[in-house]
Length: 344
Image (cartoon, rainbow, N blue to C red; front, side):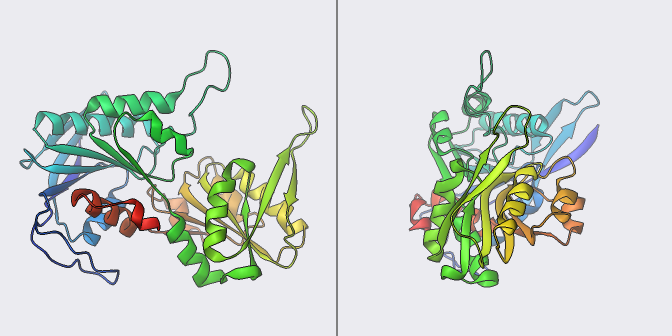
């Protein structure tokens, strides 16, 4: 058997301030005891969240049998505890989903008081509707599995479509990476009319507009059309990008093909530079090399998915952390405080 470890940690119940250079975290004296359980999908983010909360991690175990079966052992008492299980359903998605479900079953059988599934990346979110006859709605199926396995609530980040929150029959908080992206854009590119925020398709306009409003910047849209079957896709830019530093904003980058084509079209319209900010860096099938050979100045992603070797080695891909954002949301849920106020 291959032995892979998970982690658990206890939240202090007396008032104190968290360490670090970020805003102080004040924990309510009456807050319930809390534990963090990390799956194997994104251990580095889970550890960063734990560090932000000043919540030491203790050990648990996940073992994989030779035939691929997953077995979980929780090496600490969780009876009556408020448990936050951190697990992105990134590649290999099916293994990560099963690990999530089995960890929740272990927590239910260990009598945890409340289980919150913390999904920095919900991998099946793109399958949110029927795309043809006899096709599934897999996002709804996975939502049902998570609820049935024992989750009492879900905390996630930048769902591909907001209505997916309704697929869960339990309370669901969908966080937005917009504040993290906004802060980084201000630092590197400024704000106002010198920059242009661009949505790579019509479906992402709401997301891009939210960031444009925060930065007091203009908004443009990439209109993708295929004139006739078999002909190359044509990208038209709705809005004037000439002389602007352009910022493409999206939720998921997979192969990177759309971003690369959009960057080419934007530069052809006279933009001074094109940078892409994307929440979830799936980056499969040689996407990093594709980005490096493109007109993109850089691709900026978050650590909602753990970076692979190609991403860490690339000079054109930069990673922002959402640990503080997710950690603060976890603190607020544990203390029964408002999560939406994070974005007001």
